[in-house]
Image 1 (cartoon, rainbow, N blue to C red):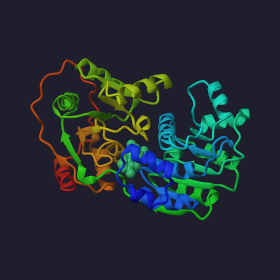
Image 2 (cartoon, rainbow, N blue to C red):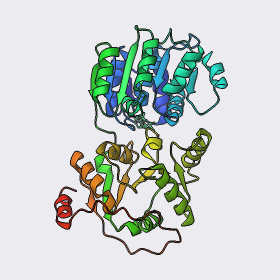
Image 3 (cartoon, rainbow, N blue to C red):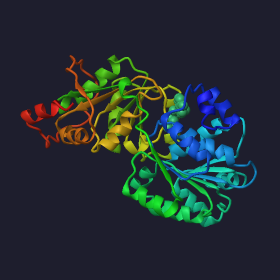
Image 4 (cartoon, rainbow, N blue to C red):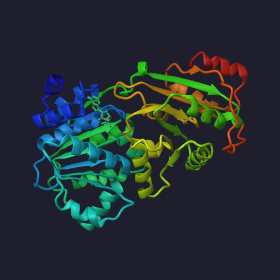
Length: 397
Ligand code: AMP
């Protein structure tokens, strides 16, 4: 606990950290908390799982006064992240309770309007916040801390203009904290125009590479699904995430896994908010252990206890790859990332490896049993890499 105390964290927050049984600060906490508590503007290059929520929470809990109007605003890219951050803030402020509200689209606006009347801290997605601004149901005149969480993701999702419009509605006299997995040109531009002498701190992803095993299987298109079923049945796993590149594939794989007697659920942006909450609840509670998801749906979700991440489709960029594998081997736990590769993934896999220097070892194909499920996909043999090329690449893996 001393190591947290030395960062300047206030007593009530230290008590909640003790309850959470955190042993020592993560790297981003060590580097950013003293600056945040000193009132500096901070740009933190840190991925999900780095412990960034506690970093900005410690600043918010220190300076926000209960019942004094909305004083802290946290912008996040997705509804799930809004819920998750609000929950984490509630936990960390247990011994100094604050009015915390999550505000996002896809659910009724009236309860939010009511809640906003007494909220001290708001976590929300840009679209719904602008909606409230337009209706005059939110007052930003007392905001003293503005947090932009997963800024790169908000830009990727097309929220750049919305974010800027919201920032311009906040008082100029404020502290601005920006968290982003990658410091892109847009992030730098935004920081230049809206932050005061920001100090940049960066850390590697919180995933401990020594605790994360990364492997790949090279299979025929028609065996991909059977291999996934085999591994899900034979690997000793706790919670599992299976990543696909499209909503359609996500639904299809989840459905076929259920045909194969595996309790799987799909989550993607095409589901209603109620459904998404439901799926996440079941997954969190361990009632269903396999979550099949797209990158957008999974981004920022804090799910502990994920032992395996499967890339059923290989993502197009290393950035996505790193985000996906960052779901496991978190906070000191061990994890495994398994890539199921067929010819149409070669191009993406080569791209990932070009940008991300890491050991991914090839596993031999196990003997597969027949599955009842239909084959989820066919065809698309367009990106065949020649044998020699593949061998050359393999030295990189
Ligand atoms: P975050 O990056 O804020 O989403 O945090 C990722 C996960 O790490 C959450 O489950 C936190 O509760 C947990 N966490 C945050 N800080 C620490 C810490 N110092 N030690 C262990 N776990 C932590």
